[in-house]
Length: 201
Image (cartoon, rainbow, N blue to C red):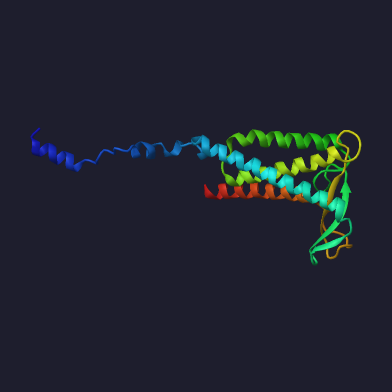
């Protein structure tokens, strides 16, 4: 082929990428999740989960200790909304599994085991924080059962937060604690992340 024709053919053809962008774009549909692509990111998400769990667990233990030893008397936290009403219950979150020690223990162990397994491959920061909250709440109430009362995990859970109009009024929701709040917040975050992922498709 003459040099002029070769030059014309080369001018009309698309330039060949030298940075591999075409191959990356062609395989975009099969690119794995970010946590799978980067071990460093996977480790950071795992650290975030356990840091969240530790921080919330510590907050749960400190608040229960303070309430149990210094704030037995009912008082107002948020006027007309949130009151401090110290009580104890034999169940888990919001009194669930009342009197069913083995059911509570089994459910808690299963939840914690699932979270630990999931921590090795977390998809994003939202799920990492959410699972950390649930883990902290589950272990927080389990600790109460282990250290309070007699028998194998037969102790009571310390509750002190109540949605009520006054410190002595009947709560509109079972009295709860920081661990219970963490479980609910974590569950809502997981639901939010699932909805956001579904709508994004």
